[in-house]
Image (cartoon, rainbow over all chains, first blue to last red; front, side, top):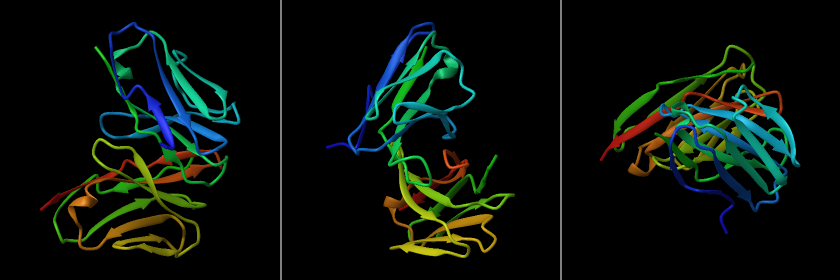
Length: 113
Length: 110
């Protein structure tokens, strides 16, 4: 009965490869997010979706493409991985847009070699 | 857009000592949230402050929002080893985008 789940938990891959991370929430929330946390623990939003609609698209390389097949799922596909993409990626959700708390998934640690 | 400076970046205390982390903004905030991230874990929502001068307590944790709504603090009384982690404040840019502070990493000597 995990609220926000992500797969995989760990991802080790080589430069140039393409990979995907999946996220699902069973909280009935309307809004989902992708965050990137770097090695210094700095947490930065990448994308947010509300009811499958893209709301926020930060200055993220277009190698990163989110996709929300329904409001319970938000996946992240990354093309042509680079060393600098190594980080922990967190999915999160909130009840709806606005000043609500966010519930984070366990994270996916991506290592690009 | 809204940004917050969080200090200190690191804090090491003896178990039983108190701990405080501060967030400061140059602009008036609509509200502020606090999250805790245990080592190897994910951020977990602690609280949201909305009103000027608001003080909220959760057991040994005390959260304050400044009168001018430009700063906030989280104070932990008599730290325990379970308090270890990184504490983040976060503020909204508009009603959509949550911007996190740099975090304060708390380590505790048992």
